[in-house]
Image (cartoon, rainbow, N blue to C red):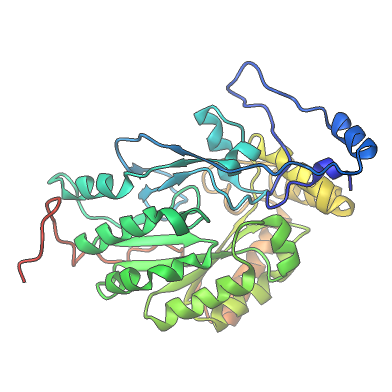
Length: 364
């Protein structure tokens, strides 16, 4: 492997041009290889993570997507240190003037005022309580959350208002907040979804380099379930040719660790993400690259992405149907309910919501 390809702890070595920018900086990979050959002490420079303040004045986002099970969401961060090579959210970083590659996982926008913004929005008379998804885009428990505790601050506000929330994450750090989640769950106002792509720690370490390993996520499921917090699993993404054979084992492992509901989503590769994932295959699965990309095309009408509502999560064609059938059969065998989405009104309730003024304290 050429030494310049090694970005320790990162999911990609790519800095693709921003589709909204007229100019871009292109690195000369051949120059790095030449330096590595002539300098025995050369080592690739680590790419540091930079945290940038996000000055958003509101926190709750609304969507009208018919194939997403929630209408309102909050995102404490933009960009994600987990570095998953396949992440569809990478392309959103381009709206901020960055690229979808290393910038996405090393330039993180931090909403440090998120708890205060959330409290102000929930306190408004115009707010009608509804289940919130956290996060709708990037992971709310990525590594810097351990230090910044912005997600925990938001959970404290939600617990105070008893506003329901559903969290989805790849990080076992979610168990740090068992106290707040347990308080919300006592009012049917909390649920957690752990995302799983593989049970193979070696594959996970290169596919999702800064996310918790599969065993840690399964243990998080067990702890959440034992604490009385509804927990589910999301098999996302299913990558044809790479991990679809693990679907039955993933479903069973999640059920064995306390998950009570499950869903799955097929890989989609919008915009620059297709090039980033192809570069990842070049480095880590070169012998499977053509097979995997061709199978993705089989499920996407000959392309690598289809953003059409109703098709983007499940794909089309015989291979997509086979994968969908395997998901449903595996769910039934593991004891999960049929065709149930992760975020459902039947599981989360707004009945206990109470409107609070900012800074208001309990009378008793």
